[in-house]
Structures are given as C-alpha cells and as structure tokens.
Image 1 (cartoon, rainbow, N blue to C red):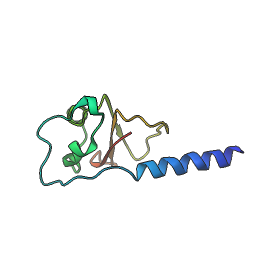
Image 2 (cartoon, helix red, strand yellow; image 1 turned 90 degrees about the vertical axis):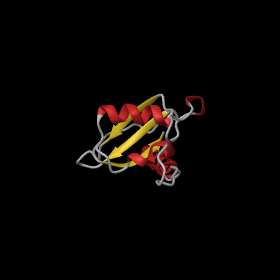
Image 3 (cartoon, rainbow, N blue to C red; image 1 turned 60 degrees about the horizontal axis):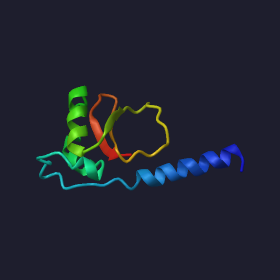
Image 4 (cartoon, one colour; image 1 turned 180 degrees about the vertical axis):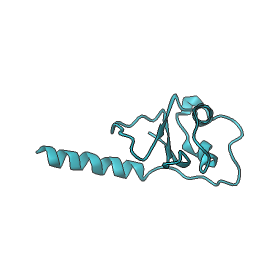
Length: 104
C-alpha cells in the first residue's frame, strides 16, 4: 500500500472517530466532576462552549470531565492521530472561545 493510500485511510478513520463525539442537554451544567475511573466524559463540560479558554478553565474542565490530561486546540494546531480516551480536547476559534469539547 503506498503512502498516499495509507494516509487517506488514517485520515478517514480519524474523521469517522471525530463524528462520534457526544452531545448533551445544555440546560443543566454538571455540578460535580465525572468519575475518573470511567474515563473522559465530554458531556460533563458541554456547558463551557462559548467561554474563553484559559489555563484555569482547562484544568477545571479536565477535572469535571474526569480526564487525566487536557489540551486546547486552536484552528492551526498540529495534532497527532492517536486516540487517548483519557484526554479532554477543547477546540477554540481564533479568539480562544471554546467551540467544541471532545475526548480522545
């Protein structure tokens, strides 16, 4: 299999996995942190969409989601393709406003 085909397959798998992110009812934010034994739960921090991402908010979100690590992804961030179910991702726009939360 040539490199172009291999890259296309990896990219397709990553896009399919990204489409599996969970959504939640935003009427009630999570009041307590998720259980870390169950892994990252992005629905616990859906209420953060629209807020400015800061280091303090990232740590708060990591704890609430029950994730072991967390990162802020800007529109131009270079990321690896490995999936980590214990990692929380906060996607932000150019003004660092959170547009999407996901685990992986």
